[in-house]
Image 1: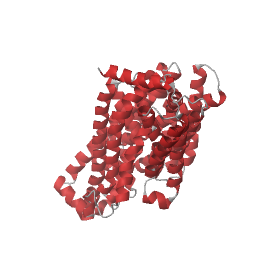
Image 2: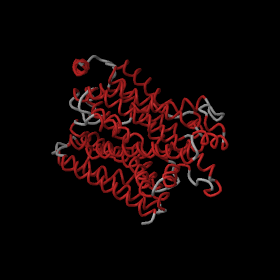
Image 3: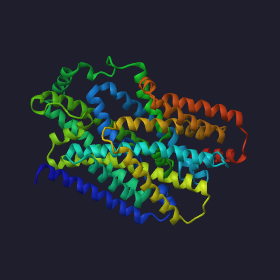
Image 4: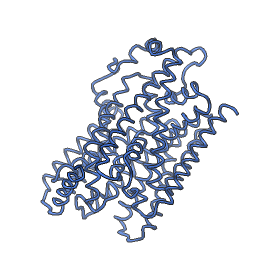
Length: 498
């Protein structure tokens, strides 16, 4: 069997496994709560790894290594900001959100939680949230599809568009039928594959480059500043922009929805340890892969030439270092990262369209079977739009991800934090803050002179926070029901932690 034959066999085994898991989840999905939130029964390990896999996407194995390969460790500030942000997200959002969403009318989506928490009789919060999710997730999903198309082009020489459609077909298939359970179970397995692949490439790569000392010298010969976090290219605004990625965690619907689905508050502590451990080692592996790649190409410049696309350094190193079948498993890690995020985003977008727009606008009372059908239809519709956006192979994965990440972090992050920790947040304040954050992030991110100077999440996040607080203080009226739910949440958290 040829090298490509071995690699393709590994990919096929991986794809079939994903479909089988999707079918298993489909058989366990009996109602809308199952389809959208898995019946709130996820264990800590599944919650942690599925959240991590949903979070990182193709950016972890393609975007980040590509940035490090081109510019060195100065690009690692993003990884530092993300790690701190993820830890704080698990620590201060996960436990309280798990309890509050159940206390507040058993909310199964972020928009429905905000609607119930703030007693928004106008339904404007649900509709605005649903629209924001729809707009930014369409860009986010398309970034994953771009990664999938690049993957098949770089790995097997297949046409970019063929690869894109293969990834879409399998991912949409298991998401469409298996819902949240399929997404969570497949993300758990995909998280394991990503972790093992990211650790293996730099460890074996250092052996091929002659050890740590030889690797460091090879990197320095390319550019001595590649090993410095404070290279001459680093600016104060640039470092702040990179660290500010951490703010985004508080408002990412496809990540924090995992907190709502975990079995209990007690298990969030164990999940946090698993999730952050996975994240630190995976990010270290991504950075290590890029650095080893720099050294390997420097040492073998005569035979290899230059790397055509820096974002494919993980793919190329896997093929150079391992037996074709093992390299195929490494390649499956790329698909795991891409598909886990696409599927998570599709199910959240589906939830927003059905639970928060369709129900709110039409006030339709129908069976769970009808709503599950509409959810599946929504998955298909969003996927088609995202394919159109992803059709251009020149799109940058990192740019698409950063734009969507800033949108969610700005629109939802401050509002989620205030809703969990501040009694005086009002529906008008939340709506005003949410719209302010989304608009600032969208407009700022579309103006190169602004986005190049400072990442749009910084003005977006703090703009939303200030507007939400000011408007809430101006419109606050004590509501006994809201006060009772806030107190009940605190009581249950204290009780569950004993």
